[in-house]
Structure formats: structure tokens, C-alpha cells
Image (cartoon, rainbow, N blue to C red):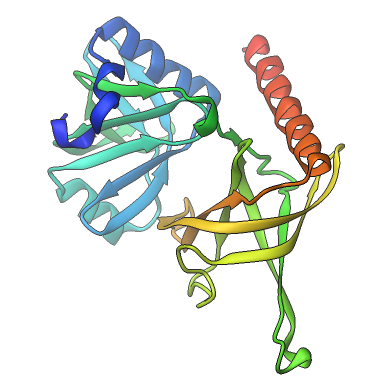
Length: 250
């Protein structure tokens, strides 16, 4: 892994112990955690299928877009990251195609080192895929009220500081870094509905497992009220509790 991959104090969070790295990767597989794969100008999502400890291989899910897969396999510098929960990052110099019992997969060498970082402000929890939580963003036009509209995006993760949402391609021109939206509605299951100001902090293209090109948008909560903070806290607590309950059954 190149030193440029890490910045400042992140160096102290690099893990080089092979047993610890294997433990981290096995946990990713057990929890079916999503990883972002970046190479060149391309980005996609994948997850760890299994770790071959004896042969030092890691197997990951492969997309259905053959042209995209060809570009991925031809790349000699691929970055794997996970930003929700415990933040992870490592690079691989070579990816190959493998055939497992249940189909094709990506095979990489077991990383020699990876960065593992957990900070409370970065702690993100994955939101449900089944019955996903929508984020409703009102768009008003002061000059033409008839042009008012509602944008509905789907949550993929949440933290105490903001949410991550998936937006369709092409991306609405309103979504630019720094843009703010008032009176956004998020109805957190079993908790209640919030009314929030959300600010765009980051935008990145992603390729979904079905090959669809979309965007992940990171939205920050701007000065949430005490009531909204309470709802956010309760929802993240519920997600943490559910994740721990699921892990205890495995």
C-alpha cells in the first residue's frame, strides 16, 4: 500500500499483522459488508465472499457487466475502501478471475497491510436493503411555484453526522458540493420523521451489482434541532442493536 494512500495521523492505524488482517476480512464476509472498488476513473461496489487462509487468497463478488469487469481485471492499482462503521482501506496490484462452486468471483492476494480507522464522527451504519428508507428533498422555485418538486432518494447508510443516499444517473444538476436543502424528510422506521437541512459533502459514481450506474451522495446534517438529534440517535442505536443481534446468531 502506498504511503500516499494515507494522510497524516492515519499512518498509526495501518494493520500489518496477518492474523488481524484475516480477522478483519472474515468479518467483512460474515457481515456481507459492501466495499467500494476504485481504479482509474471507475468505481463499483463489491463484497468479500471468503478468505482462503492457507493459500493467502481473498475472493470477492463480481459484477454482471463484462466490459466493466475486463477493465477492472486489467487494472494494476485497485483501491478497496469501506467508509461505514469501521473505516477500511487497502490496495491490490493484480486481480484475477476465479471460478467457485456457486459461480465466478474476483481473486486478490491477501493484503500485506490495510488501514483500519474508527472515529465516532465517521461511524456509519448500513441501512436496510429490504424496505429501504427514503429521503425526501423538496425543491422549490420562488419564481414559478408550479415547478416545485420532490426528490426521493434511498438511504444506504446513516451516522450521527449525516446520511449517504443513492441517486439515479443522470444526476440532478442541483446536486453539487456545498449545496444545501431545507425541510428534508426522513421517516426513520420505529422512530419517527425528521425535518432536516442537509448539505452535499461528497458525490461519487458507483456501479451497482446489477450493472446500473448511479451516484452515492454524502449529506451532512446542518444544525439539527434537539428533537431531530434525538430521533437520529435512537435510529442509529436501533441499527447497532440489530447488527449485534445478527452477529450473535452467526
